[in-house]
Image 1 (cartoon, rainbow over the protein chains, first blue to last red):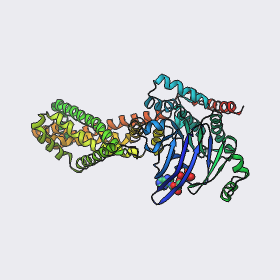
Image 2 (cartoon, chains in turn cyan, green):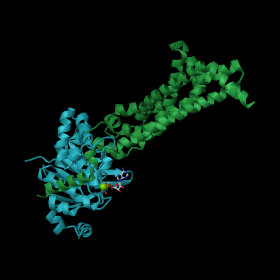
Image 3 (spheres, rainbow over the protein chains, first blue to last red):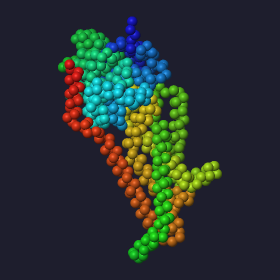
Image 4 (tube, rainbow over the protein chains, first blue to last red):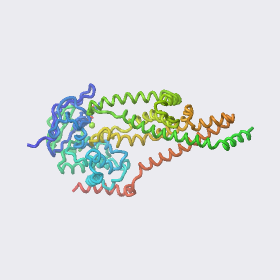
Length: 245
Length: 260
Ligand SMILES: Nc1ncnc2c1ncn2[C@@H]1O[C@H](COP(=O)(O)OP(=O)(O)O)[C@@H](O)[C@H]1O
Ligand SMILES: [Mg+2]
């Protein structure tokens, strides 16, 4: 039996009096690509942020590779193993593209700068950004920024990648270049949890689609099940908005 | 009258230029080192104050941070809330028997800790102006609080705050004049002794004002040019990358690679 990469039981999270996650049970198998969909405010980002401990859950259990992450001591070491890509890219503004991909390798994994640079160039090449290694982040397009952000995360050799609406801040013509990179990662067998509104991507690349609504998982299943034959009325209603995809 | 005032000025310059030169030198030494040491103090105090510990921090770190925050706040409030002239006499005499320091050291010490209090607030607000996403990205890559501060947040904060930091230098050139209270031979002190022996107060202090004005003007020209250079360097990078055709090409290549 292969152990789940992520196992979540009865996860609760409130901000003040606002309960955002109301008991989430959720797991991800090795190599699985899970797309989290749901309307804005349903708690998708909060769930992702709990998984890499940017938010502290109030109650529940999160096990990643069998380890209870809510009681681990070296959070930095844990986070280094879980890549995260943000809607706003968040490339370090005080470093060029290459340095963005090297800094954490050097500081966290203690790699030599030669080793870090080789790794960085390898992944920049993978996302088609090697020609921009010396570019300043302010001088590249949104799609290029997100590809660099993906390369930066991959440089840490993560066993799990989290994507929080990686294409939502992009102009339409740039969405594809980022999704193509992510599809390639899926093919490569990386375990990924992707919050997205790109239903086309979810349909093609996801092994499983999870629909979140108001802090609970309303329905989950294969893309086929969710998109062609949703059981829940809420899921159906939500997907109505994407009928044209 | 007109020509005799000019005559007085020329006379003073001719007779007293060595002591004016010494005064200028000391004023520049005090204000420049005060600004640099103050910046270092500000980076440490402001940096610590701006760190936001998340729940993953150890209880010891939380406690230590609380203590340091409290001390930092007291330091900033006291030094910003009292006149530097008073700080100078108080610290000079209070510590004289302990450290037996010379006046120049004392002057640099006072202006440094005074500037540090202002710098701490400049750095702190510079840090708070850095997008929280920068911190989250850094933490999500496994970098610690300190590593994030040193490598990601502080460099951006310093760059953003550069105009305010430079302004502290200009302020120090002027405000170091109050340090003559401890008889340090800065420009103001020299002016006072020249005026005391010539009894030509207007001419002497006119010269002194003009010199201060020239010093601050040169300093602000230099600071402006540094700022322009910094801004230019942040938006330029090697030729091959700025070539727009290159960008399009790379994007297309990336696409092609994955379509197949
Ligand atoms: N740090 C926070 N403080 C207070 N409220 C928050 C915070 N983060 C998120 N929320 C609230 O939690 C709810 C869910 O947010 P989020 O997880 O970002 O949803 P989604 O990603 O599905 O749009 C929203 O109502 C949002 O306003
Ligand atoms: Mg969100």
